[in-house]
Image (tube, rainbow, N blue to C red; front, side, top):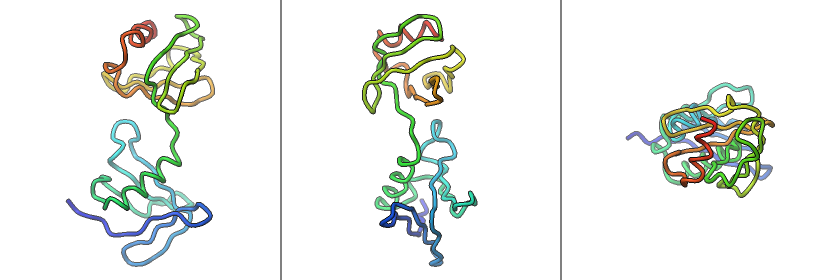
Length: 156
């Protein structure tokens, strides 16, 4: 395992900066995942304000604990993809309909325009896009409760 040596932190104004191993400082840097759903801990780029890659991080495990925490914090600030934990109910078994859901960020509802807004990314991972374009993730369909799976089966 190769440990990368650089500095990545947030200034007092809330802007991220990157200092390369050669000591070159870059302001207004953004951390971006290459594969946020399929491989969230692999393939992270630090990019400048113009979108040019400054550093490629093959795997977050290659970073020290403190540096990894900073990169994950920056990624979390940028990304918003709540995970659906449970379907409490649906207004109809045909779309468009409203789903009442429990997420890792609290209870909410989403408007599903059509079955095509539910994408299967793998055998167990689903991506649901609501009518406002917000994406919700179902990380492991098999781990959901029986009632939620039964409701989802009507749409899949």
